[in-house]
Image (cartoon, rainbow, N blue to C red; front, top):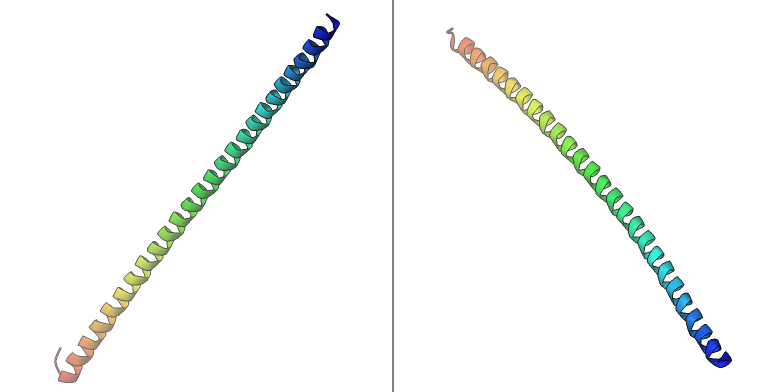
Length: 94
């Protein structure tokens, strides 16, 4: 029985080593998954922040454009009124 015990010991030890290796592989896979998930979450947060900043910048630019357009319209209207007044003065009427 000594020989059979030796064989059982060899195969039993191999089984234990295989189980240990499988456990370690599962741990590494779990750690990798956790790190990948964390990186994906951070990337999503960064993308969301960038999108928010882009919307804010576009909104600010739109508001500035509207203000500038309004100022230009006011200036054009004032200039047109000045030209009309000058034309009436030239024609000698009020």
